[in-house]
Length: 536
Image (cartoon, rainbow, N blue to C red):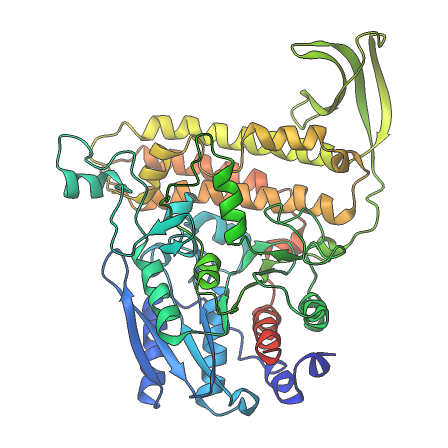
C-alpha cells in the first residue's frame, strides 16, 4: 500500500527508520545536527533570530526546480517533527532518496528555540508522567510561532517591522519605562521566529510548506490549506494506517471543516477567506479600512498567490486503537430528566452525575410553556454531549484547584521571571479551552445528543485529561525555574500539582502512559509530506 501511494524507493526508506532514541534532541543538539550536515556539504543559512537572539537556521539539500520547506518545533512541546526532519536530512545527505532529486528541500529543525529550551521532559523517561510534569507551552495565540506572521493582503496590513503592543511586562519596562505602557491597545507585532520563517518562504518560494506538528495523544490527522485531487486526499487519510497507526476519528480537532465528508482527520487549514469573514463579523467593521493583526503560516503562504500547499501532518505520542474506533460505545447511564421554567423560558433538561456526585446538565432544549413539569430518573444511552459535559466539569475542577495554588504563589516577592507569569496575567485560566461556550455546544447541538462512539469516548476520557495534566505542567515548569531554597513553600505547591496530575493520568489505560514507537509516527508525518510533493 505504501509503495503504491509513494514510490517503492520512498516506501523502502520510510520502512527503515533510524534506531529509537531514548530522548528527544534539544535545540542545542539540533544545532549540532545542522553543523554536521554543513560539514558534509549541505548549505546552511541563517533565516533570522529568536526573541532571545538565538539564530534560526535552515539546511538546504538539492537544487531541483521545486522546493519543499519544513520546520520542526512549531510548538515548543512538539519535538517529533524535528526528529522526523533529522531522519529526512540524514537520508538526503547520504543520497538515499533519489526519488526526490527534482526537489530542493529546506529544513528548519527548530522554529522556536527559546521556548523549546524550557522543556524539562525530553531527556527523561518516555512516559506520560514525565511529559506532563515538564512540558511547557504558551497558551496565548500571539506567542505561538505558527500564528505570528505579518501580512499585506486585502483588508489586512501588518508590516514585518511593526513592533506593536508589548507582549510581556518585562518587555514593556524595557520599551516604555516604569510609567505605563505606551502601546496599550495596539495589536502585537509579528514574532521574530515567525519573521524568520516568513523570510524562508520569501527566499525559497516553496511549492510545499510543512509545519511538522505532533499531538500528544489521539490519532493522526492532517491540516491542509489547498484542495488536492481526491486521490491525493484519500492517500493522506490512508497513510497513517500504512504505519500501523490510527486515524483520529473521535472529537473533531479545532472544530475545523473537513475536506471530505467521511474524514474528520483531514481538515481545512483556516485560509484568508476565513480571516476576512471573521473580520466582517466584528461590530463596527468598515470595509474601507485596513486592519492590523498577526496571521498564520498558512495564510502567509496563501497570500503569495502561487498556489503553494501548506500542510500540518500531525502524529501522536501516546496512543490507543480506540481513537480510530467508530463502533458504538454501548454504555448506559442513570440520568434525570426535568421540565421546568428557567431564566429564558421553559426547558427540558437532562442531567448526569459527575465523579464528585454533582448533577450537571448534559442536554437542554426549549419546550412550549404548556409542557407539563417533570422530574424523573431514567436509564439512557451515553451520548457524546454527556461525555463532553463530564469532561469539561472535571477539567474545570482541576484548573480551579490550580488557580487556588497560583493565588498562594503569585504574591511572593522576588520570583524569577518566567513566561507563565504573563500567561496568568493575561488569561483567566491557564489555557483557552474552558469557556462556557464549549459547555453550551455540548448541551444544545443536535449531533452531541447522539449515542457516543468508542473514539469519542477516548477523546473525552483520555485526551482531555492528558491535556489538562499538561496545562498543570506549565505551572510546574514555572516552579522549577524558581529558587527552591529561597521559597521552600513551593515544594508543597509542586506536590499538590503532582497529585492533581496523577488524578488526571489515572483515567488513562495503562498502555497509553508509555510513549509509542517513534519510527511509525515519524514515517506517517514524512509520508504525508512526500505524497504532496509527488502530486506537484
